[in-house]
Length: 135
Ligand code: HEM
Image (cartoon, rainbow, N blue to C red; front, top):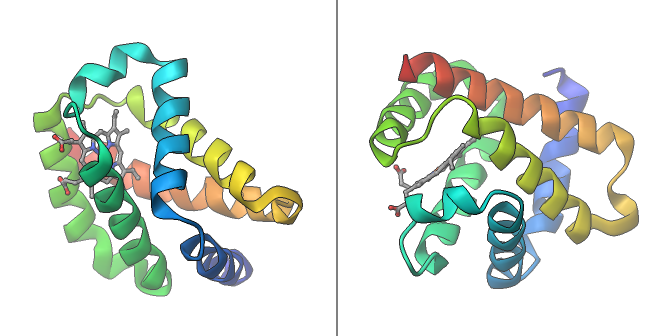
């Protein structure tokens, strides 16, 4: 991720945080489970709690993007917990797709190709770190 992408993501995150987390969460999980119903059983019946955890973790990562190396240990620990949830390597791109789709709905016209590329690069770095730590 280059410096411009880091600042694009940080600015977009400020906007994202002004959106209603419940609505964004509903969008994200609805999209994920409509596209991949087989993933539903991994999650608790009530995913409301889960949504805030996901947003909080992304928020934590976004706020420290420029010191990404220092986050590796935390991301690796999270990855190991994910192995326990039954998450496999092939699930990461599916979650990524639902995440980008959700961001696109939320940002509307402000979802530019540059912003999309920055988020795709960011998610790719996090998921690559998680996948490596899961092995
Ligand atoms: C960048 C990628 C991801 C991030 C930042 C993330 C974040 C989180 C966080 C913060 C939690 C709360 C519990 C914990 O920290 O262990 C969690 C739980 C969970 N995540 Fe992820 N996750 C990611 C990718 C995935 C993927 C690819 C899947 C596959 C479907 C997945 C499925 C789950 C499940 C099943 C739980 C546990 C639900 C529960 O029992 O409460 N996550 N995730």
